Length: 318
Image 1 (cartoon, one colour):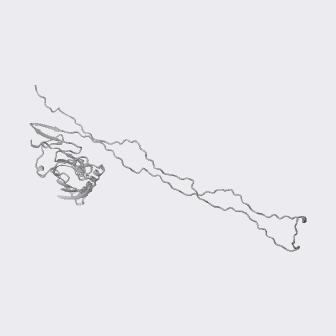
Image 2: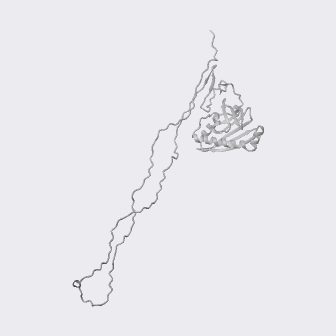
Image 3: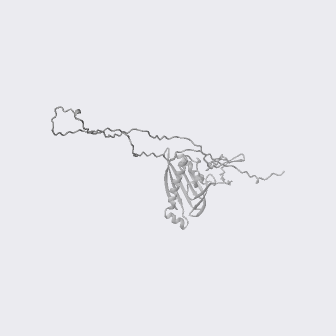
């Protein structure tokens, strides 16, 4: 037989990881190609797979089950296969899961796939999907804390009723209890010649959480622009006006006549001096507000009920 071993670290406590793995009917949710796993008794499992277009069905038996440590199984008909999954606590929040699968490739297609390592890669991918399944939930969907040992595995199962496995123990044993994928529980016992069968009914409930996700963003870009402004200003300037005066208005003084002179009269004018001063004219403020909105989240939940058919009861004659 071919064999492949893989392990993975799961961010969940040991008890939760082990409990989840005991929920065999949940396997199709993370195992590739597995279409159905049906619990037919405390130890008996029905498997249906579709791989490479081929549908296969077989019965398997749990041969060993030690809470928080180990689960082992082996096929009892159909495709020969067996497996062992062990659980080891790394820390209070981390668990190591190791799986060893043994199988017998059948036909050219399966043998070719085995040579290419396809089954090995599938087991690793299944473990990774299992990790994502329980980590995303945050808790297990159920769990069975019962124990199955090697000597127990040798005891045959008794009759199966209504799809739920019931193993009849001897009269000294008060019954056996096992919780399945959806919290199913079957209990059987014998007391003073009387027997009873209890089938609890379960219902799923929705636990709604919240998470923060991006909802967009607001961008602010500050830029500089220019514009022409006209600022009026009054400027002074000097000019020269030359006037001729009559002799009687002149003051001759002591100036020498017929002496050549050169006179300069300076003129002035004002010109604008530009000075720019920066001042704040205002600004913008980005303020995040938090509000609430009412939304209705739709989800499908499962609820169990029973249909009672008593047509098979024989009426007593009078």
